[in-house]
Image (cartoon, rainbow over all chains, first blue to last red; front, side, top):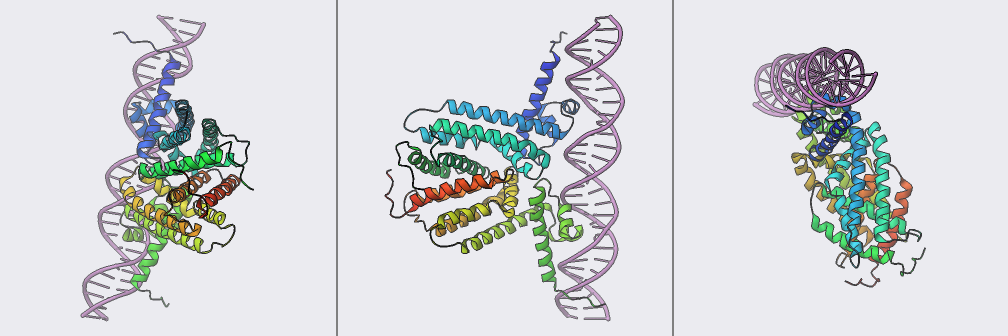
Length: 206
Length: 206
DNA sequence: CAACAAACAGTCAAGCCTGTCTGTTTTGTC
DNA sequence: GACAAAACAGACAGGCTTGACTGTTTGTTG
């Protein structure tokens, strides 16, 4: 029988990828406390030995997953932003895009890590900086997509508020899925944003 | 030696209270995954036997803690609202009050339960309705404190958005404590709210 | 092709968590 | 005071998790 020959680098890369994706899937489906290394290896279809070869400890696996996840989130955000329509309903579409991201499975996984990091120093040291990066990227994307002029006073804060708002909506969505409520809130928010970001609008009094 | 005689009802009540508070404290300090029944009993200074007498299973303990926590949160909100100053900076003070609540230890505990509930059906069945109650109470309090007229279109959504915003800010605060950023955002948001909720403001175009 | 290193597989022990169990003390009731 | 019931105490077993360990296969290199 002929066995296909695969270089080591490739084998290793694929295996690590499988494990990281399985880790994220476990976080989404079973949460942080339900994500055990055995479960991850089973889910990935990887023997426990192989898993421990690539990630000697659970920390190694999880910290790598944190980095992986922030990569994926950044990419998803950029892709979603690229597919945004132009024209009238642009602002509303941007909000929808952001809200979609903050209710997606990758966000659920990130949320698990985020909350777990609160009481885990090692995890926090990894999650903190990376989440900050994703946050900044989201801010930049939102700014771009909205065509907002950050040099104007208050604009920066409004865009940040927008991101914090969708994060709050995403959190609420995790247990009670009320898309209708979210839609109404975002409709209203879009109007507020349009009014405040409009270049022709008079600058607000101090 | 003289032993003070304590009625059973009282003993039982005190013991349960101690255990529930210890549970919340463990959630705050060690997170959901770090909150084991043994740790709770140690923290409460209660023997494991006594713990299992009052709460036969971990579910019983946790579900009772969920109810306890929603009680505490509701009370804290009411107290904070009662201490709100009148006058000029009222709106900003309301936002501060809400933001304070959503960065408090009780919120951290609730967040742990909230996130854990996402992947735990039994917990979700308990957390869902109670969190909704707290949410509604917060909404009512915010509405009251802001003197907002919910019958006007859009007002309800703005108040809800405010609550979702502070929830998002609270989540962000759990790992990176940037009070400065939060302050700026709330400053800006207070202005927006004042402009939108002012009864004299012209109704917005549809 | 020979020797070495990386990748992979599976077993095992130590530790923790949960909940059951038996036994003791305190309280309520007759 | 005696008896029942509630409250309290602590030991124990079963299951799960983690990481160390030994052994096997596959790729690489001279």
